[in-house]
Image 1 (cartoon, rainbow, N blue to C red):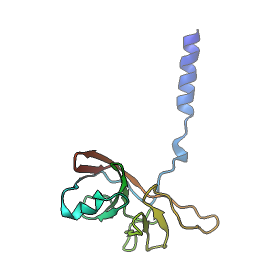
Image 2 (tube, rainbow, N blue to C red):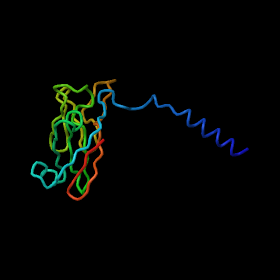
Image 3 (cartoon, helix red, strand yellow):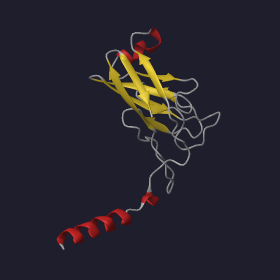
Image 4 (cartoon, helix red, strand yellow):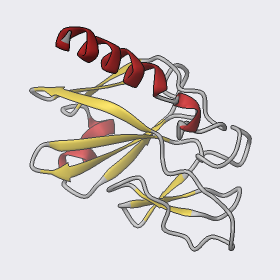
Length: 147
């Protein structure tokens, strides 16, 4: 009898989960891609310095490219370079500012490359999304950014 009760309780809990409150960003579709970064190549040399970030553009590298930052101690983060609060457009490719931040020229919002949070003060009642994060794995001097 106890096993039946646990089974019914498990089924009830599984069915009662509601995914409609998901915090998915409606502006950005998450593309599937994989991009390798060789830290020995000159174009990625800045990533060898903790606190430095670079923009990498091109086809099949995120939506509008990616921004990769070296957090130090061998930790790297990669973010989508398209502004998270606009559909991709001519103004939505973010620019690195001050080394550890990036700015969207569509709305002038500032974001942290350290944690992806919006740093700008928002108008009352306005909701904003943080940066879209991509997975970074490392092996030796090769980083792989993927989604």
